[in-house]
Picture (tube, rainbow, N blue to C red):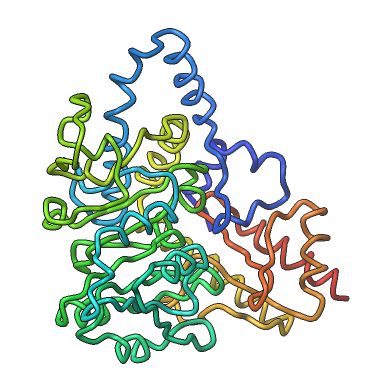
Length: 379
């Protein structure tokens, strides 16, 4: 069957060097245009010096506007930060955790650890976790923990270990009923599954560019619901959070009235240059086309795993599965090193197995090839 998305392979140099680059849930392939973009950054610095800031500062929202259509957000509602840990800290700083009547945080034990570390570090807050089961977390376990004391619910839309998709809609609805806010970590979702943060009515959404967005490190992003942008007052702030940053005013901050109040300090400008090429390509390809191919490729992986009688630690139901298939077998940790040596780039995680994550630019031959390599190692 002809695959029109394979025309994009030429935009990603690593695909010419590896037998199969199938670890896009960990680090997406670098677009060829990134070389050009980073050179443009260096040229601006070398040629314009401090004057380059006139172009660099607007990039925090201009780059965020490339993320916005991928998550169903309006323009000027996404702020570029450095990573999800910073975004989490920014969100947590908006709440008064000394309020004993509303100081509860609800999350799951399948959330990415970086987020959980920050949740448990909040002084005055009580963080409780819904326990996962298999490749997902039963939504009723999350709902049961949400009550009038809940201030924040933190959920991964797609789980990093299994690629299970969490049913967040009923959680958001109940959280809002009791006056709580909801943050979605979409690091494993943005760029590979459709997201409509406006329809979901989530209060915050965060993620990064390392994975399915092919944007590299240092370009995290934070969506804040427009209605909250003038209300919340993050204590994790900086001079760019001020309404008049170049006034250099001394004393309590006078917050910017838009998404800039979540900007904090000076941005990581090289990361913004690096990230744009991946965002632009994903927007051009389209999430609908990416999702259709992802489901087809992951279904193929599951079928080939079943032929070998491997353990599949990802959801089998298409509507519950993100872009990754986790396969496991006796000796999988040692085997994954040999697979990498043979030119197929994947990774291994405890309580998961080998994670295989084809993207829109990967071919069916690569998927069949890695599964054949696993069969050889197990024979």
